[in-house]
Length: 286
Image 1: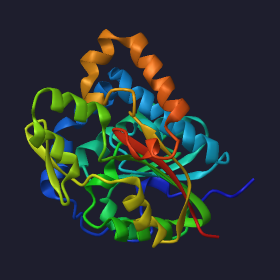
Image 2 (image 1 turned 30 degrees about the vertical axis):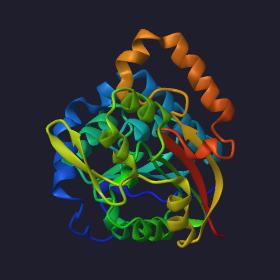
Image 3 (image 1 turned 45 degrees about the vertical axis):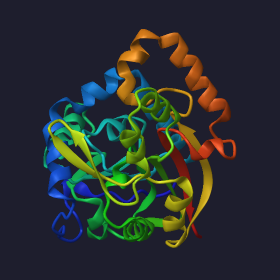
């Protein structure tokens, strides 16, 4: 059994540097933190996407493993993976998300397996080098980083040789979104995901500074950091995006069929480049 390196009592091995995530984005996630876990679990589309990301983690994670949760939010994924025997180092730039994650793992009796730090993804070098077997990032935290290449390099330095990184990333080409806003004649809204730079996405009266990615561009940033793709698939290709929760609740049987279609075809060439999100598995060079 591989020895697992643990960070005890939420202490880093060296002092954390200042968080540089844009204040607007941090404040947006602070504002939704108290209800984020519940609202995500109540959204059947998000539940399905989360299940597929966690399934990918479990396909590649030896047990027990030391995992990095990058952009952990309220600790939903960290809690479920720690309950399966893994040790988690979880980070998030939002202080209130960190508070929620710490409360969740404490109440679950998993605080000895999960260390949660308030740390932006642009400050990962505050964590020990080569200390993790695998890293994962769910529901688009990497869409919010300022310099994806620099973050990719920092992730690489946190992983052992041959370590796996799994990311669920918000993509550019969402068929449902294009069809929805085209039917309303709202071409400006269609163009949002295709913007070259940062887009201010509304969230609870705040904004989240977001960049949308095609899988190839995202993968290039990680290739320069020494990663190679293991697999790629679309999430939300035929299934509706999470913000169409009301539609999904009215038509659960249809959404189930559409999710199965995603599973059957989402890794096909061309199709894997579309979808509300894409799920990419990368391996660090040996």
